[in-house]
Amino acid sequence: MRIGIVGSGAWGSALAHVAAENGHTVIMFAREPEVVHDINTNGTNSHYLPGSGLGEGVTATSDLSDLQGCQIVVNATPTQYVRTTFESPAAAGLLTSAILVNVAKGIELGTHELVSQIFAEVAPSMKIYAVLSGPSHAEEVIEDMPTTVVCACEDTQAGRLVQEAFSTETFRVYTTTDVVGVEICGALKNVIAIAAGIIDGAHLGDNTKAAVMTRGLAEISRLGQALGADKETFYGLAGMGDLIVTCGSQHSRNRYVGEQVGKGRSIDEVLGSMTAVAEGVPTTRSALEFAAEAGVELPITSKVAAILFEGEDPMTAIRELMLRPAKAE
Image (cartoon, rainbow, N blue to C red; front, side):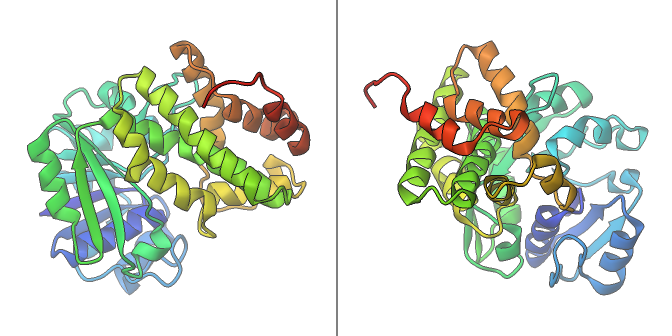
């Protein structure tokens, strides 16, 4: 197949590598001319994924309309930029006959919309939407380390097609129809990862981190089920699996952000020093507003917001969480 990837960051590059391994022709859209040149000349993306070898069959372009005619289009653009990217004239008709596979994780600021809802608005001619998620750091995927993810698509036949397109000896894809559940997992696990990083940076211990991860998963599940998601999703690859790797890995951008804040740096200073996007930061704001509309309480997310945006001391935040009214698990 001909597969288009919109977004030239680490994850988009890793998926290009996986698709190329399966013999597909891959064309990547990148905004930066130097990234396009690097991919086309050297077969690498040294800016976003140093040491990457994308493989034969991967090319890049700075013209989004060059992706017309692809059977699968992967959105690897961060959530807060999806709308502007796909509203551009160059994207017109891009998704009319293609399967859209989204790998961005978050909730849009202002609208409080999941990525599936954004695409329903900006690409009304889109026929099939899928989301690919799970414990999958690009730095390990590009090295062919064994990885498992899940593809959520309400069209089971299309879901199997995506599964076949990206399944390799080292990249295993499962399927589900729970799009909302997988999207909620992907969005909120980044917020909990920031909380885990804050705990690491403030040296608050493994007990505290385990508690935040476990209760964070309960928080994610509570919101997802309120929106009609399947409970099982939250204890699978998109939920527990992705939460574990994002809260614990050295590759996790969101955990890194939290760690630096836990060490005393301001959020603006931390973000200003990064080239990659930590989607959990804007999602912290939008998730609280989103959950309020759904009538669901997110106490850990609320404290992450207070630490990031109001300067609350992490020890104070933890103490207040510990002193919440006693309840059954």
